[in-house]
Image (cartoon, rainbow, N blue to C red):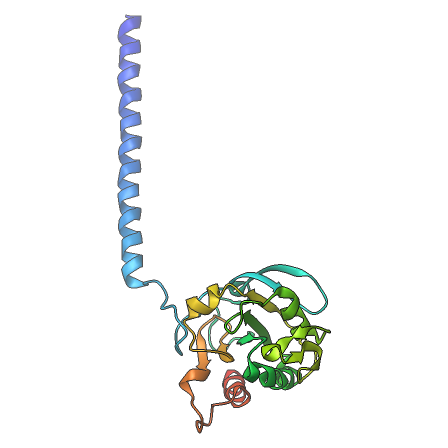
Length: 228
């Protein structure tokens, strides 16, 4: 008698276990179908540097003011859930080379832009090594902080003599050109304006000489005016 009861309980237990396994498999199948539907309905964001695309992430180390180097990620500055009309911080992203003569003069414009827009726009400079293999972090910091260092501007100038004031915003080390190549840039200096959710709203290459939005200043006026 006891054996029959044990056998009966075993059968019931096995049936319950089978039912749970079956339910789990059904739920797994449903979740898989839902994920596939979500993939097709909301495909991955269009990543690139054209206006309307999501700017690629940049991961590395940055230097700010007189501080040391620290971890940097561009997407830490971005709110992917931002909606137009909400408050948020736009980003001016500059790529430059400490040996580039045009970047040397562009440093003055960046200083002027920061004085005008620094309270409402996040400035980020990415330092690349296009023109020389002798670049170093020390040269990047000297260019940023106006420190004594011979070798800027195609090795023709001391970094402390560059135009403009000290740049107190992050300078990202991209001397290995990883971000530069990922962005597939035509040269430097190069500027992008990103909306708070990381979408490129202005690409300097798409506004050639003669375009009303050719200069970053006019582009920032247009972008910030439209965001208020």
